[in-house]
Image 1 (tube, rainbow, N blue to C red):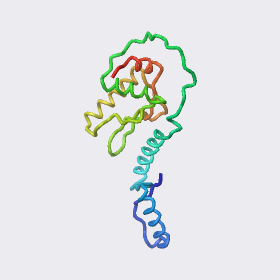
Image 2 (cartoon, rainbow, N blue to C red; image 1 turned 180 degrees about the vertical axis):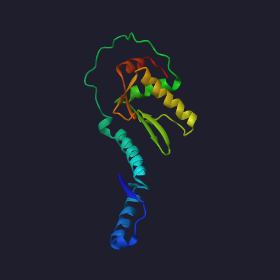
Image 3 (tube, rainbow, N blue to C red; image 1 turned 45 degrees about the vertical axis):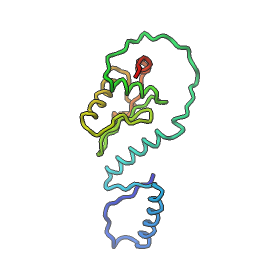
Image 4 (tube, rainbow, N blue to C red; image 1 turned 120 degrees about the vertical axis):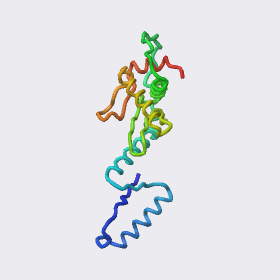
Amino acid sequence: MLYFSSQPVAMDTVDMVQIQELKKFKESCQSRGLYESYDSHSDFKEKFYRHLQIKLNEHPLFKAIEPESISEVVESNTQLPQLTKEARTLLKEASLDPHGNIIYVRYIGGTDIQTNGKNLIGSTDRREVSKWEAALQDLINKELIVEQGHKGEVFVVSNLGYQVADMIEL
């Protein structure tokens, strides 16, 4: 992941030979789709954060985890709580994710709720986004998922959440 600033510079303070070499390098990278430009520090932060999450989700290390042991199936006494269609879908998909992760990302271009290799928000329409945000909040309130970290961007399915997810049929 390479990032190049597109902010203007004073041309009398740079070495023109180095500028030409940089242009050649960028062109070689661009033809292979290896870099991204950014306009500001916050733009870089947003792009890097989003790309890093995608790369981590795609990495084989996080996909090929074998269960340590197979345990006996036990009947659950857990009651199925009242959940919206979106909350049921989000919980079920998260329970199918190898790590039980849900990633909630807000950025300039919109909002994503990602789990199990999928972005569940299919549009940038605010009504659609708010349904999925409400679903996420509902799962938090019912303690079916718990926050990882402190920024409200990464969540994992709780034990209760797995029990409920096992009862959900989509």
